[in-house]
Length: 227
Image (cartoon, rainbow, N blue to C red):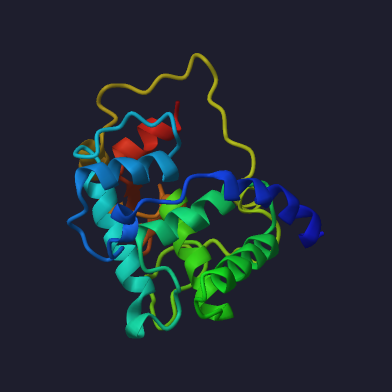
């Protein structure tokens, strides 16, 4: 099965190699605007027209997630540069299993004479999945966030997300929320405290004995993926 899936990956070799400008450290929050735009095109989609400046909150998340993944001197994540992230992201967007993604990375690292460490490669896959989805996919070694985690060990990333979230709920056409239905009034009337979250899987999650509600606050990310 993995071999068959890797046939489709061969087409990726025809893609242009990321330019040297993508060799920047993924932990650095000061990413040049042109590199930010390239990352948005790769991670969000080629049709992305979002301003790299307007997405400041996303790139703060990008740097924080990368720093967490590279804790303990980067022993558990092989990705180091924006180019490394893009390489994995292109694989994750293919309809192929996690095993096929892992095998492709093994082959790529061997060709580049880079060390092939299974745990570090899996760490890069989890990190890139988090950067793609803004969902806590997998685990970070020696890290604990308290957020809802999406486990992914087999199959495609797309199927994993679909299985986790299930069918989307629908509202009847005549249902309309009043203008008073705001986060501020939710706290004033219902006594709920708003807690902002970077993890889409925690959106509207009640925490702390139902006294707080988590709200996913990355408007630019939602605006693009809603189109």
